[in-house]
Image 1 (cartoon, rainbow, N blue to C red):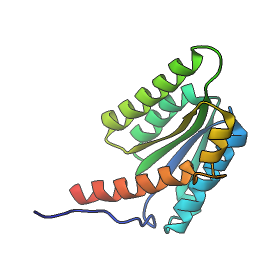
Image 2 (tube, rainbow, N blue to C red; image 1 turned 120 degrees about the vertical axis):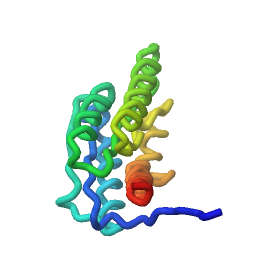
Image 3 (cartoon, helix red, strand yellow; image 1 turned 135 degrees about the vertical axis):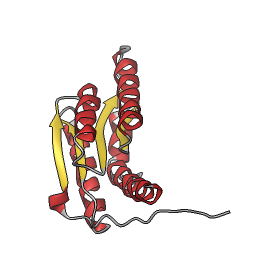
Image 4 (cartoon, helix red, strand yellow; image 1 turned 90 degrees about the vertical axis):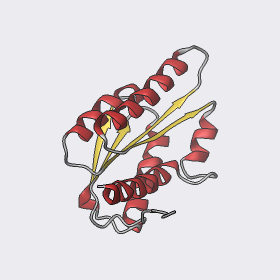
Length: 154
């Protein structure tokens, strides 16, 4: 059996990042982690475009338009949906997850689900770089590897 793996080099990749203005204190850290990971793995900052949307519910539509544009090897979606006292969280988190998955499957462009879905602000901050690594950076690494693997498949 032949094992096929991709590398984590981004020097010839072009990515789009879609992030939210909502919960920006958390999301800004995710964006910083994403940019740092891209550059540390050989990507050029001029090959990383950043699009801002109002909230997480708007992420899938913009991600789909970017994926369909043919300009990007991958799209990284970043946001934070934090549970509150109503069912709103369930609708937003589920809708965003489904929209991002459908975008990737429909377009064939890898799209990262880097939208935090947490019970508390503290959990979100921890995942944005305080304790549990930076999920924005992790999303970029997953997309670098996936984009390079898709190139090998052809």
